[in-house]
Image 1: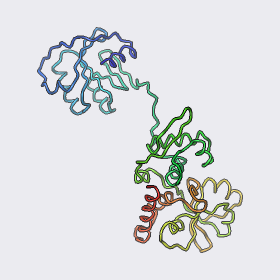
Image 2 (image 1 turned 120 degrees about the vertical axis):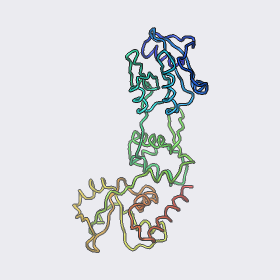
Image 3 (image 1 turned 90 degrees about the vertical axis):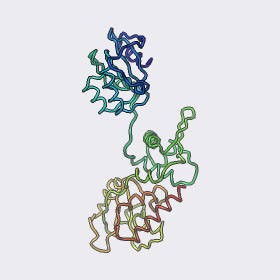
Image 4 (image 1 turned 90 degrees about the horizontal axis):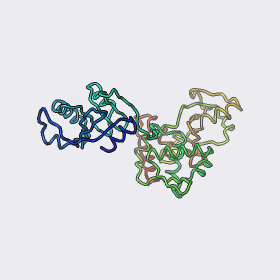
Length: 328
């Protein structure tokens, strides 16, 4: 109640005082319903009002009770409720029911409707994990040393600015994958011990953008040759593979390798002289120099393989089991 009066006085600069809760009912209200609310009486700019603060914010029940209170009381009702959905706001406004919530005030008797009254800074809501955050998370999940994550070391490892590293770590913290410890002005993050690998694999994105094919002779222009796809799968599992498939960051390939050497690119493999190259959203060698990490491999394969091939299905399941074994 004190908070409500503070809002009315300090936000709206209205003259408000609390009254004795002595008001009559035109119709009786069951005691069990009355017990569900803290019922108070206030005067706002010489208008007497009843304030209903529900003990349980069950909107369906509140809507029914509001109608009953409206029919029973002879003075205006104000619903004092913390959290309220957009649809419920619309219902209350359409029915001229006054309310005060954490982010809105509607008092039609005083011709007042204020939206977004909260002074709290808006928290950024992440729905998809960013490229850098995904790389950092994969690295932290698979590395074998301490789980302490320092912004400076993170920036150095992934060749980005400290600001970019800080944003990515904050993003992972918002996703609830990291915990934070502040020592003076220094922020140190730690990988949480209770994270769910299945949830992470759902949140992470397939790093592969597209496949291209190049002549075997043009592979010499690649400063690093990173095995991917079924070539990498044969490294992590028992599946056999006789063909080398490589992955590279698409931006790096376009800006440096192809621009400097004008490599012929093909959309399909029409003869055995062509080599398959996967163009990725990020540089694939997060953990090892010449082969993609098992998590990125799993993400690139889990939806993109012949479902009729039980041999491949079994191998991808084996890869998944090994990932869980590496992390836990």
